[in-house]
Amino acid sequence: MYHDLIISGFGGQGILAVGRLLAHTAMLEEKYVTFLPSYGPIMRGGTANCTVVVSSKPIGSPIVRNPQSAIFMNAPSVVSFEERVKTEGLILYNSDLVDKADSKRTDVDKIFIPANTLAEEAGSGRVANMVLMGAFIEITQVVGMKSAVKCLKEVVSEKHIDLFQADQAALIKGSEFARCHTPARK
Figure 1 (cartoon, rainbow, N blue to C red):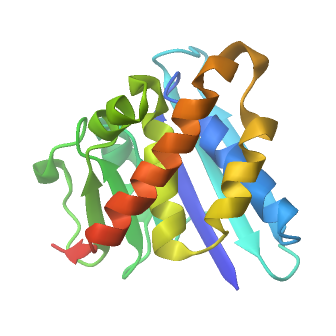
Figure 2: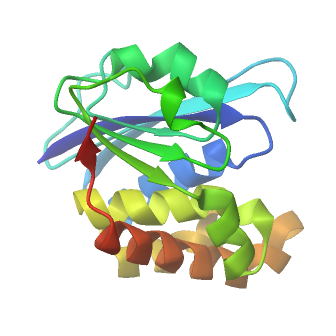
Protein backbone atom coordinates (compact mmCIF):
# COMPACT_ATOMS: atom_id res chain seq x y z
CA MET A 1 0.00 0.00 0.00
CA TYR A 2 1.22 3.47 -0.91
CA HIS A 3 -0.71 6.73 -0.95
CA ASP A 4 0.42 10.34 -1.16
CA LEU A 5 -1.49 13.59 -1.04
CA ILE A 6 -1.19 17.33 -0.82
CA ILE A 7 -3.39 19.41 1.46
CA SER A 8 -3.55 23.13 0.70
CA GLY A 9 -5.32 26.29 1.84
CA PHE A 10 -4.85 29.50 3.79
CA GLY A 11 -2.91 29.63 7.03
CA GLY A 12 -5.39 29.38 9.88
CA GLN A 13 -7.57 26.77 8.13
CA GLY A 14 -5.86 23.90 9.95
CA ILE A 15 -4.01 22.55 6.92
CA LEU A 16 -1.00 21.38 8.93
CA ALA A 17 -3.22 20.04 11.72
CA VAL A 18 -5.01 17.59 9.41
CA GLY A 19 -1.70 16.61 7.83
CA ARG A 20 -0.36 15.84 11.30
CA LEU A 21 -3.56 13.94 12.13
CA LEU A 22 -3.11 11.71 9.09
CA ALA A 23 0.58 11.18 9.90
CA HIS A 24 -0.08 10.33 13.57
CA THR A 25 -2.89 7.98 12.59
CA ALA A 26 -0.66 6.16 10.12
CA MET A 27 2.03 5.78 12.80
CA LEU A 28 -0.54 4.45 15.27
CA GLU A 29 -1.43 1.83 12.66
CA GLU A 30 2.29 1.00 12.31
CA LYS A 31 2.58 2.29 8.77
CA TYR A 32 5.48 4.25 7.35
CA VAL A 33 4.73 7.93 6.97
CA THR A 34 6.27 11.25 5.98
CA PHE A 35 4.82 14.69 6.67
CA LEU A 36 6.28 17.74 4.95
CA PRO A 37 4.74 21.12 5.90
CA SER A 38 5.18 24.31 3.90
CA TYR A 39 3.84 27.76 4.68
CA GLY A 40 4.51 31.34 3.76
CA PRO A 41 5.84 34.05 6.07
CA ILE A 42 2.32 35.14 7.00
CA MET A 43 0.83 32.46 9.28
CA ARG A 44 -2.85 33.42 9.28
CA GLY A 45 -4.21 34.17 5.82
CA GLY A 46 -0.99 33.28 3.97
CA THR A 47 -0.56 30.10 2.00
CA ALA A 48 -0.12 26.78 3.76
CA ASN A 49 0.22 23.28 2.41
CA CYS A 50 1.66 19.95 3.36
CA THR A 51 2.30 16.61 1.76
CA VAL A 52 1.72 13.31 3.49
CA VAL A 53 2.90 9.91 2.30
CA VAL A 54 1.56 6.73 3.90
CA SER A 55 3.02 3.36 2.97
CA SER A 56 3.33 -0.23 4.09
CA LYS A 57 7.03 -0.08 3.05
CA PRO A 58 9.82 2.39 3.85
CA ILE A 59 9.43 5.72 2.02
CA GLY A 60 12.36 7.00 -0.04
CA SER A 61 11.50 10.70 -0.01
CA PRO A 62 8.91 13.02 1.54
CA ILE A 63 8.81 15.11 -1.64
CA VAL A 64 5.69 14.55 -3.73
CA ARG A 65 5.65 16.18 -7.15
CA ASN A 66 2.52 14.53 -8.54
CA PRO A 67 0.27 13.36 -5.72
CA GLN A 68 -2.40 10.70 -6.06
CA SER A 69 -4.82 12.85 -4.07
CA ALA A 70 -5.37 16.44 -3.02
CA ILE A 71 -7.50 18.36 -0.55
CA PHE A 72 -8.10 21.98 -1.53
CA MET A 73 -9.54 24.32 1.08
CA ASN A 74 -9.64 27.43 -1.17
CA ALA A 75 -9.53 28.60 -4.79
CA PRO A 76 -5.86 29.71 -4.81
CA SER A 77 -4.92 26.12 -3.90
CA VAL A 78 -6.73 24.85 -6.99
CA VAL A 79 -4.76 27.28 -9.17
CA SER A 80 -1.45 26.32 -7.53
CA PHE A 81 -1.73 22.54 -7.31
CA GLU A 82 -4.61 21.05 -9.31
CA GLU A 83 -2.56 20.32 -12.43
CA ARG A 84 -0.01 18.36 -10.38
CA VAL A 85 -2.47 15.64 -9.29
CA LYS A 86 -1.99 12.39 -11.19
CA THR A 87 -4.42 11.36 -13.90
CA GLU A 88 -7.18 9.24 -12.36
CA GLY A 89 -6.31 10.73 -8.97
CA LEU A 90 -8.72 12.10 -6.37
CA ILE A 91 -9.36 15.73 -5.50
CA LEU A 92 -11.54 16.91 -2.62
CA TYR A 93 -12.64 20.55 -2.79
CA ASN A 94 -14.17 22.75 -0.10
CA SER A 95 -17.16 23.80 -2.21
CA ASP A 96 -17.98 26.62 0.20
CA LEU A 97 -14.79 28.39 -0.95
CA VAL A 98 -14.10 26.76 -4.33
CA ASP A 99 -16.49 27.12 -7.24
CA LYS A 100 -16.84 24.07 -9.49
CA ALA A 101 -15.86 26.31 -12.42
CA ASP A 102 -12.43 26.82 -10.77
CA SER A 103 -11.59 23.17 -11.44
CA LYS A 104 -10.29 22.49 -14.92
CA ARG A 105 -9.48 18.77 -14.59
CA THR A 106 -11.60 16.16 -16.37
CA ASP A 107 -9.27 13.20 -15.81
CA VAL A 108 -9.55 12.88 -12.01
CA ASP A 109 -12.24 11.90 -9.52
CA LYS A 110 -13.62 15.06 -7.95
CA ILE A 111 -15.84 15.54 -4.97
CA PHE A 112 -17.08 18.95 -3.87
CA ILE A 113 -17.83 19.04 -0.17
CA PRO A 114 -19.54 21.95 1.62
CA ALA A 115 -16.93 21.74 4.37
CA ASN A 116 -17.67 25.05 6.08
CA THR A 117 -21.40 24.30 6.17
CA LEU A 118 -20.85 20.79 7.55
CA ALA A 119 -18.35 22.17 10.07
CA GLU A 120 -20.99 24.58 11.40
CA GLU A 121 -23.35 21.62 11.76
CA ALA A 122 -20.59 19.80 13.68
CA GLY A 123 -20.31 22.65 16.16
CA SER A 124 -17.81 25.16 14.73
CA GLY A 125 -16.99 26.67 11.36
CA ARG A 126 -13.35 26.33 12.36
CA VAL A 127 -13.31 22.54 11.78
CA ALA A 128 -13.88 22.46 8.00
CA ASN A 129 -10.43 20.88 7.70
CA MET A 130 -11.63 17.86 9.70
CA VAL A 131 -14.71 17.50 7.48
CA LEU A 132 -12.45 17.13 4.44
CA MET A 133 -10.09 14.75 6.25
CA GLY A 134 -13.05 12.60 7.32
CA ALA A 135 -14.15 12.38 3.68
CA PHE A 136 -10.61 11.57 2.54
CA ILE A 137 -10.30 8.74 5.07
CA GLU A 138 -13.70 7.33 4.09
CA ILE A 139 -12.94 7.37 0.36
CA THR A 140 -9.35 6.13 0.42
CA GLN A 141 -9.33 3.92 3.55
CA VAL A 142 -5.61 4.83 3.86
CA VAL A 143 -6.11 4.78 7.64
CA GLY A 144 -9.04 3.79 9.83
CA MET A 145 -11.56 6.32 11.12
CA LYS A 146 -11.44 4.87 14.64
CA SER A 147 -7.67 5.35 14.69
CA ALA A 148 -8.03 8.94 13.42
CA VAL A 149 -10.52 9.80 16.15
CA LYS A 150 -8.16 8.25 18.70
CA CYS A 151 -5.25 10.37 17.42
CA LEU A 152 -7.16 13.65 17.58
CA LYS A 153 -5.95 14.33 21.13
CA GLU A 154 -2.35 14.14 19.90
CA VAL A 155 -2.80 16.85 17.29
CA VAL A 156 -5.33 19.20 18.90
CA SER A 157 -3.30 21.76 20.81
CA GLU A 158 -4.26 22.91 24.29
CA LYS A 159 -5.06 26.26 22.73
CA HIS A 160 -7.78 24.62 20.62
CA ILE A 161 -8.97 21.90 23.01
CA ASP A 162 -12.38 23.62 23.07
CA LEU A 163 -12.80 22.39 19.47
CA PHE A 164 -12.12 18.74 20.31
CA GLN A 165 -15.78 17.63 20.26
CA ALA A 166 -16.44 19.59 17.08
CA ASP A 167 -13.32 18.06 15.48
CA GLN A 168 -14.64 14.56 16.22
CA ALA A 169 -18.09 15.41 14.89
CA ALA A 170 -16.57 16.99 11.77
CA LEU A 171 -14.53 13.87 10.94
CA ILE A 172 -17.73 11.83 11.14
CA LYS A 173 -19.74 14.36 9.09
CA GLY A 174 -17.08 14.28 6.36
CA SER A 175 -17.10 10.50 6.37
CA GLU A 176 -20.89 10.36 6.14
CA PHE A 177 -20.93 12.93 3.31
CA ALA A 178 -18.37 10.90 1.35
CA ARG A 179 -20.37 7.71 1.85
CA CYS A 180 -23.39 9.36 0.26
CA HIS A 181 -21.63 11.24 -2.55
CA THR A 182 -19.44 9.29 -4.90
CA PRO A 183 -16.69 11.15 -6.77
CA ALA A 184 -17.72 12.21 -10.25
CA ARG A 185 -15.42 12.60 -13.24
CA LYS A 186 -16.00 16.04 -14.76
